[in-house]
Length: 473
Image 1: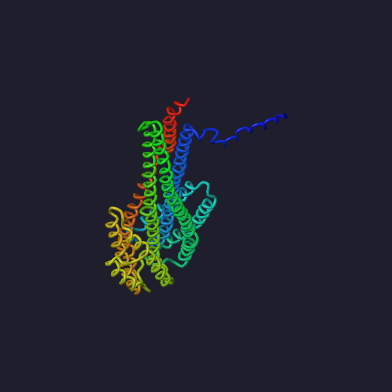
Image 2: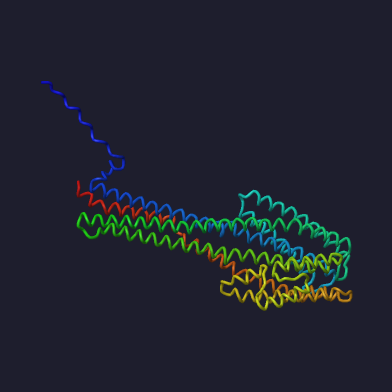
């Protein structure tokens, strides 16, 4: 009889890596698998929360500490530059007569604005040391400002030697001033405004990106956090069923800790998104808009002086004044006479547009409405003065009276309006500062607290299943 050898038995198929490591078909293996999923869920919560917190921190940094302050600095720069030219025009218009606050005061303000402009340029450069384009623009402004100051100095010296009565200076002085003011209006001011626009665009893009990212991060934390809680509760139930113990205290503690972490993270991201929104909508946007309104108001005020200083360009300056007035507070009007009339009617019903119109449609802060009313009344007074000045200036006999009114009463009324505008801007600046500070304070400690909490929860999960696994040894 032939004996046939039995074929060698095949070795058992090897299980996959994870299954082999935790023997998922056994009870201990299933416990290890669920615990492993819980730890992965903890890591996922940590990852999405960490990214969302970093988005909030990046948004606050750019809006509150980098591009945002640069916008304020360049807004101050634009105002200082425009007021330099306004004071120069006032000095030349007064001649040897000390009208209003006087020639010496106008020269003092001119020097103050020049120093303010240099400080604003320096501040803007310090806030953007790694931006070559902005550094180049700042240097270009400094060069053009130097040429302006040279022309302005020559005009002032020549005008003082000629010692004319209040009114247009000599042709030589007028030519020097024309070159200086053209340089300011056509070169220096546009470059300064471009700095503001560039930084303002950076702030808006950052806000849109980071605000959306923070809200998306909050949704992901809720989703992944829900998965974590389901896994932890499932592990608790699984252990209760197989080991006849109602509650695993350590796993219960891990579940509660997870719930607290998820709720705290969601609450943090909600508040950070709110702080970003307040800083942008209630603070930055209004500060930028009102700073622009102040600079344009000051420039229009200078055009009113130029209207008297350069009679040959009176029609041009009158139209320019109307255009700038429409930017500040828009009402439908084709000339200044209609603008004055429409202004009084529209202010009564708060029916207007422009920079002040945008402000009137977004009253959200304490004290804002009262400050806005003072600003609107001040602006109305400025426009009434302008109408009286132009009416007096149309006759030769009234030109000197128009100049006296411009240097005295109209100057004081404009200062009242300007201070009201500054106070209104300060309300929004405080809202901006408070929102950024609150956002920074809310994120304090999360660089350490978030990973620490994730590690503690993961350790609790492993500690909770360890006694049960030890029973199988």
